[in-house]
Image (cartoon, rainbow, N blue to C red; front, side, top):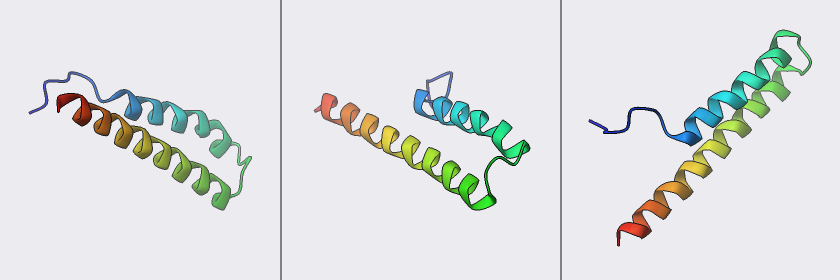
Length: 62
């Protein structure tokens, strides 16, 4: 079990970014392909952030 009460900050930022895309999806400001690309970009940014954070944490423990 994790001792952290909340999800990592990168995950919360990713959720916030996806919530910012919600009005664009509802109002159909982007095509489905563009919206899918934007959501994929958000996921890639969160994954990169989390990878860097975990590497930094592992390096500080050594």
